[in-house]
Image 1: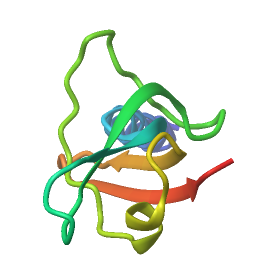
Image 2: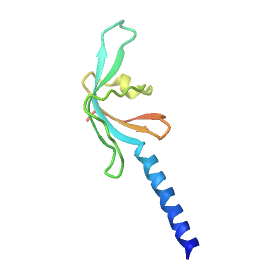
Image 3: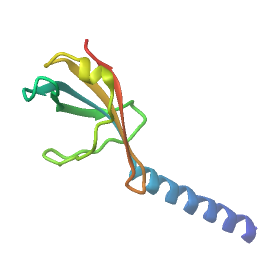
Image 4: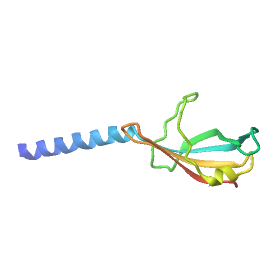
Length: 110
């Protein structure tokens, strides 16, 4: 009986550790609008101004405090470069327990 209790305790500790690690992850939906600067006619400065952050789906963690700064590089995507200024965009932003981030363009336009 003592061996069984140890096994259950070990399993509970490993599940608790996995849950703590999962809390370090973020999986968020970022919504914003395309901003284009007027520079040279051959090259436009394209950026995105984000206005909302929410969970990507109901079963994930996306804790962001008001005013918290999130810095990341947007991946190059021709859809973003071809979009009109003011076009709505949606990105999926994910982090893992080691601090690695991945940003994926989900949609451009309505």
